[in-house]
Length: 400
Image (spheres, rainbow, N blue to C red):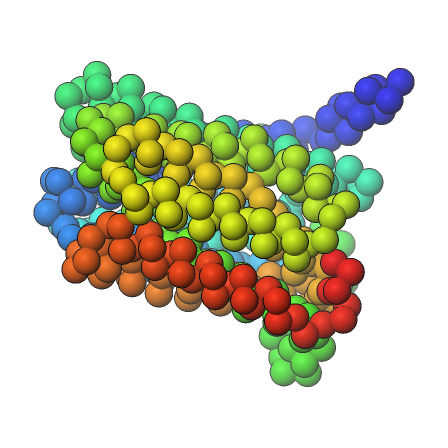
């Protein structure tokens, strides 16, 4: 009986959520097929330095996070979410041929930025669609299902990359062309398969980014934003995990397995740690996440043997599983309900800037002082974040 009750939400989840999940999965296969190879493509084929890789990755990821602020608000104003989501996915799909054709790192940067603008545009309206489509009592299950299907794409993409690189003797550009297919399939599925629910247009909304609204965000919220930023500084772009594996003499075709391993561990650990966060102190769980990231950095700094790199990458995945959902929950817990979208927007903005800084610094350290120093620096930022966790302004979060 208990099992029956536990599985009930899966049966109740609306078809639209499954469609959004499969749309996410197809686009993730397309994107990860390219991203798991891109750092090596830039270094080996285009002759880029680690600094350029860090700059491209940092600019790309921070662009996606910054665009999210505006797309969520826009979908509220228009009362139309699906059209924005389709536009975002289409932009992502149409950048894929640019990677295959790119003659220089500049063109790769352009393709990456356009791709991430697409991701930024679709993220908030898609999450809002999940909330619109789902009855409140199974909303958590619906978000979980979409995230699970998304993460399946995140390890199928690199697996496909490995298979095709072995099949086609490391022909990067040929593999990039294959990424066009699942990308276009995801846009078609969303455009044809999803019916947007009638959106209740409320009274005229006020601009959530007005000063008097921002004043209502409490100190506890800004503390979470600050901790999130230091976390991001400590965890620079995953492109450096790919470069570390390549350094260790892993055959180029097999390097994307690093991302497979990371995403597999991430997807397996996210749900159990999410459940745990409902029962234990958020602060101690964040501290555990930082401790695991310190361990990952130290392992990756010691040696570039593939076994050591794999262990470091697995720890990195556990860290993601512990912290990513938890920080999102903490934002929701500390912000007023009517400012939640804006609260996520600012959290993403600050994290985006931190990601850009972190990836540029990581690239510089890598070029000048070597890979080990890059990972030791990451561990150093973790220690700063741990000190930040001890300084805690809000009594409201003491219980959290």
